[in-house]
Image (tube, rainbow, N blue to C red):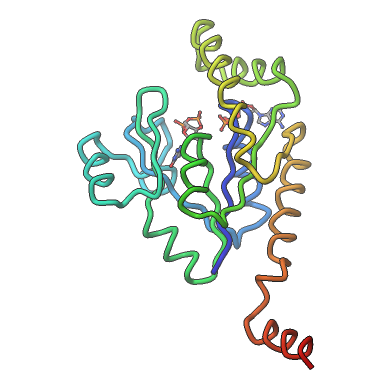
Length: 203
Ligand SMILES: Nc1nc2c(ncn2[C@@H]2O[C@H](COP(=O)(O)OP(=O)(O)O)[C@@H](O)[C@H]2O)c(=O)[nH]1
Ligand SMILES: Nc1ncnc2c1ncn2[C@@H]1O[C@H](COP(=O)(O)OP(=O)(O)O)[C@@H](O)[C@H]1O
């Protein structure tokens, strides 16, 4: 089985940015493309950035148990297609999800072995600056988003690791180290080596 890595954290902390940088550094990591009901942005490609769905289509996927998790976020649905993740893990490959915090917690319930990584802002002021810096939101929305971010921080206790996103490359280094260390866990050794060690212990 491959590892399931869940990268999450409050809105605006840099999940998308860090995930893109990490995938460049670790091309062997398989990215799970989410489904969403939000409109595509200019330049976004169906099946690459997201699978763009109507609300009806999305609700049907939930009904058919095709979603590993989903969440409603700022008026749209977002979800992780289940079979792709399960098949890729079964093929022994590591999968990364870049999703918001509520959905991430649901993944951990279904996959207790998932490696939960929470991306932290260096400070709330810096988080505000990043949300403002994206330039897509009005002042009202920014304040709402900051309140949401404070609530999102409260889910930190569900996570295994906390990585501060001060510098993109430094955050990537840490996540890469986490993945390497998790791959070295004793219980991940091939069965024949575990048996050999167990037999030697008995002798
Ligand atoms: N729960 C869940 N959240 C997702 C999924 N895909 C994306 N998201 C999150 O949805 C939020 C909004 O994403 P998006 O509309 O692309 O905007 P942006 O990332 O804020 O620029 C982000 O926090 C994503 O991490 C998913 O499959 N499940
Ligand atoms: N380490 C960082 N230092 C400075 N700015 C960053 C850093 N990481 C991300 N950003 C910027 O912060 C903003 C939010 O990043 P984004 O990846 O869209 O966040 P999220 O996916 O968590 O909502 C973007 O403008 C991005 O360029």
